[in-house]
Every structure is written in C-alpha cells, then in structure tokens.
Image 1: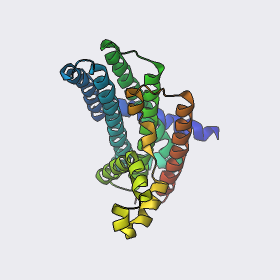
Image 2 (image 1 turned 135 degrees about the vertical axis):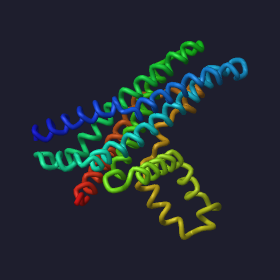
Image 3 (image 1 turned 180 degrees about the horizontal axis):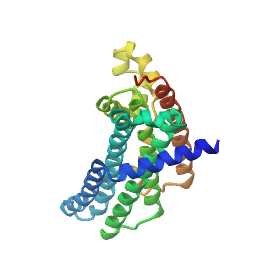
Image 4 (image 1 turned 60 degrees about the horizontal axis):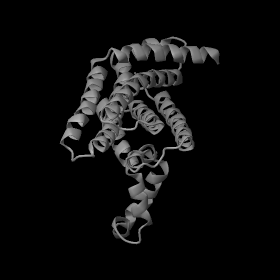
Length: 265
C-alpha cells in the first residue's frame, strides 16, 4: 500500500514540475490574470456604484472559465504526452501500475491547478478591495467552490484522455462542463408540462439518463448569492466538497478502467 502511495506521489511530483514549466500553462495563467485585470477596466465604465459588482461577477466568471480551460488543456495533454513520446512504455516497464499513472497524473495536475487558482483568487480579492468592496470570508469560500469545480473538470478530462485523442478529449470535456453548468435548466425542462421534451418525447429518456450521470456543476457557482448579499455558509461548502470528492473518485476509477483496457501496441 505504501509503495503505491509513494509511486503515485512521485509521479505527481514529476507531473507538477513538468506542467509548471509548460508554456501552455503559463500562457493560460497570464490570460487568466489579464481577464481579471480587464474587469477593473469594465468597472470604470460601469455606472456609479456598480464597480464592485462588475469586478465581483466578471472576476468569478474569469476564474471559472480560465480555471476550467487550464484543467481541460492540461488534463488532455499530460497523459497524451507520455503516450506520444513513448515514455509510457518506460513507466509501465517499472513496478508502476496504470492506476498509479492515472492517480499520479491527476494529483500532479491538481497541484498545478491549486497554484493557478490560488493566484487568481488572491488577485481577485485585491481587485475587490481596491474598488472599496467589503471583502468577506464569503469571497474566499467562493474561490474554494470554483476549485472544487475544476477538480471535477480535470477528472473528466482524465477520463476522456484515457482512451481518446487530445482534440476530442478537450471538446468532450468542455461540452460536459457546459452541460453541467446548465443541468438545472435541463431538469426544469424535463419537469415542465410543455416545451422541448414534450415536443420531442424520444429525447426524454436519454436526457433523464444524462441528468442522472452528469456532474451538477451549477452547485459551485455562487456569483448570484454574492451579488445579492446571501452568505455562503461553511456547511454548503462542506457538502459541495463531499460531492466533488465523490465525483472525482468515481471519475478516476472509471478513467483507470478505460486506461487498463487501452492497447499501446
């Protein structure tokens, strides 16, 4: 057991060092920071008294979008890079299982995302303070929720990269992210007595299955709560963390099964 943990952590460390030097990651991080700084320009153009709301709302959007983009890009290229450069054969020739490869790569990517998201949240909080906002613990909790979201998206990217090409993996993952954010709308449409699924009854069954298996990413979006002054409670964040961890464990298990069945010959 300890050998498995040590090997996974060693792979995570190597993945982190490789990713942190990756120009793609650095470029995406710079883009994220530019998005956050752009929010201050938008706030200057807003009507009087709305500057704080602009920085808050656009900042949350920027962190979510850029965090997800980083998790998707890094998630689909890190595993593919090992296959493309044939280093996967060297890894698997050692006493390293394919499950350890999946877990190690994911933990390394999670470390990179932690660095990126922490930096973005710090800059966002400083920008809010510069606009005279009353920075509260709610803002930090909102940052945690966004991190839970990118945890899930990174795991989804690992699932697709375990058997598919980088381009398709990226498209599929981004599609799942978009639908996961809109899952509550699909549920409302299914519950409605009229509308799309009433007019297209053949799609109701697949939609219900999708709603059941797709991660509900809308639970990590609390921008409206912050804008309306509704407190983000520790209990809510705790339940969201439990949901995120359960989802990640399931997704990594599924990714491991797919990777075990993959033929590299």
